[in-house]
Image 1 (cartoon, rainbow, N blue to C red):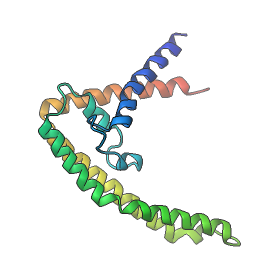
Image 2: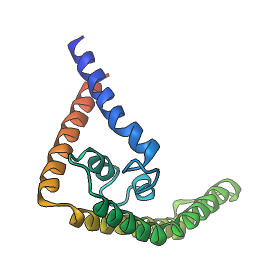
Image 3: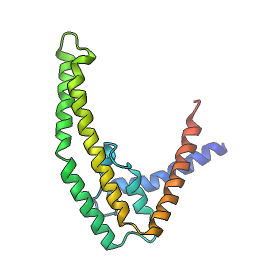
Image 4: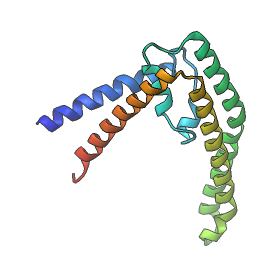
Length: 164
């Protein structure tokens, strides 16, 4: 029972962080880093959650810098998503319309997908590093503590569900 209460509390905390972040964007303005987190680029969804939990919060100047970084990121990566979609649709069509597709039938498409995803990941990491450079030393220390807490909760959640 105690384990269930702990998990419930952890889920409530994660939802407390995640739901506003998903609904409002990273700074509560309705915009900000989204695309690369969905594709696994950069350091992932954790960065914008961490930025929202900093106290004191980012200054207006820092928010403006981060918004500029994300605009650059989006301009680099948004054109890649339709290409990925098209490649995946082509693979689906080939899978269901070819007589006997083999792994070799998809080598070209999988290589192209891999290259596009690598571009997105690289752009995401560059954006995350640029955002990191905007933070003060104290904000970086606090961000590391927040990430550590989140990783601990995640590990507890995984261990709770192991063996079920």
